Amino acid sequence: QVQLQESGPGQVKPSETLSLNCAVSGYSINNGYYWGWIRQSPGKGLEWLGSIYHSGNTYYNPSLKSRVTISVDTSRNQFSLKLTSVTAADTSIYFCAACIRSQDFWFDPWGQGILVTVSS
Amino acid sequence: DIQVTQSPSSLSASVGDRVTITCRASQIISSRLNWYQQKSGTAPKLLIFAASGLQSGVPSRFSGSESGTNFTLTISSLQPEDFATYYCQQTFSPFLSFGGGTKVDIK
Image 1 (cartoon, each protein chain N blue to C red):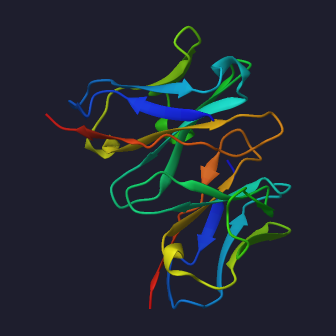
Image 2 (cartoon, each protein chain N blue to C red):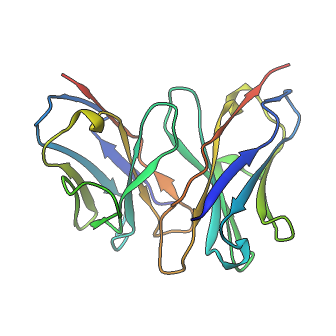
């Protein structure tokens, strides 16, 4: 059974970089089709941040411009999110999610989410 | 970018009601539309994949359909555990996008 678990600091200061990891268990990250990050601001909807494919290709939400980077660490079987120059507007629950098979085009499973607050 | 417009943003319904939620894509997306259910404080749960595929373990009262760029999630008989927020997601483009969500609450 594939399981995902987010980790990282629960608070980040404005203008700094938010860094989160998503540990994958029960499956090799090398075999997955793509892995993604999604966030949800308090009381708001889901916002896709970006995805990284098995090929190494990455796609990011254009609204975040060049602030987002997603990478994979195969030695630790995890993938990561970096979001630079954060502001209060980046305060959200951050979810990682997986699209396991190349014939699938949906996120399942998801991590439980981690709340990150941007505050000095 | 492909936009998905979800409606309504909220609805009130009673147990046993038939509920319909719609998403309209800004272009043809060839069944690449998924539906998720989210309950407060938890991660979204996949309900319907590829417009009409029922995810394993999801009750058969949930169904999805497609007509052109219009997609529909139907709950045939609303149950107490179905009060939640529902999101559609397009995955035709690698630049993924979600609908704005529909909150279903108790009338």
